[in-house]
Image 1 (tube, rainbow, N blue to C red):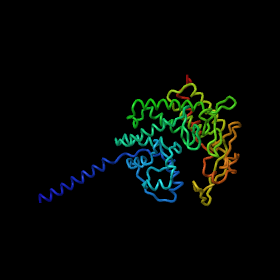
Image 2 (cartoon, one colour):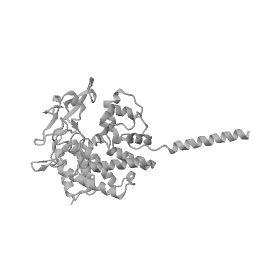
Image 3 (cartoon, helix red, strand yellow):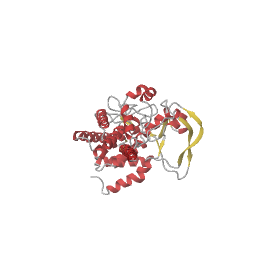
Image 4 (cartoon, rainbow, N blue to C red):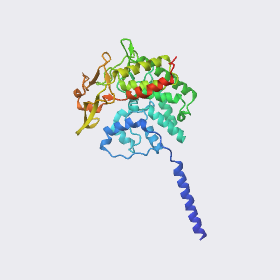
Length: 376
């Protein structure tokens, strides 16, 4: 009898130890929203034809190891990967090929990976994640151009499209504000962060487009040297862009100690957004039979409809000289109505935005209330 009791006790102790071990290896989920763009592009290109298993958000070590597997030799990461996929590395490399050898900030890549790894290191204390995050930071520092900007994948220019500049600006700002998951950074690295951030804010102010002596908004891309708006992909022509302008303005409004130059940029940008809004029209989607293109499948088309009281919206592109909204096909030819854009581009690109509404209705009034006497 005594022996039987002893056996049962050993089994219970063993079970308790196993349960404790599992609990010790469970971690709180870390925000994965920074990877939404990459996940979407994976799904559009490959995922629609597959049924892959994915790691749960609380499996942070497995997800972080996925991220480590695709860190490029220079310290950055390629774009359009889903870090939650339970897919062999060899299979991913077969599908993407040599594109996985190119680091980029496009589609919110690299700085989001560094941020996630820093959080995983803070949660687990596993040194491989700290080492990878440090290499990623070094890549970010190395890629900053002399005048303060970072490039995207499509053109070597100061790039605000796809949150290249803005994403890095926010990332560096949060480190400078001593976010807890970067508390392990040494003093020398923190100095690099602050220096890089100041240079990036400086070039952003220089890039604000001036028309007839009046500051307006920003383009998706600007020259590193002249700061003028420049072309990127064939359908992304030099222009003034409300979505990028809104993101930049929100960032500038979040600065704790704005300079008079920052305040002037904010006032001018807000005035341009107010001047450029389109009212009384709504963009309406309607169902069509599925049409599959190389990078997406559409089940809808878009048209303009007149609607009294519709919320204001803005075109993606405005001509610099005339402030007239325009569109563009892949052939690079400018058109002035959505109906003239071919179905693939009409449904595969965001031609309108409502993001300035929050700037005008919420962010700007809140910013003005912080500085009732103005910025000096």
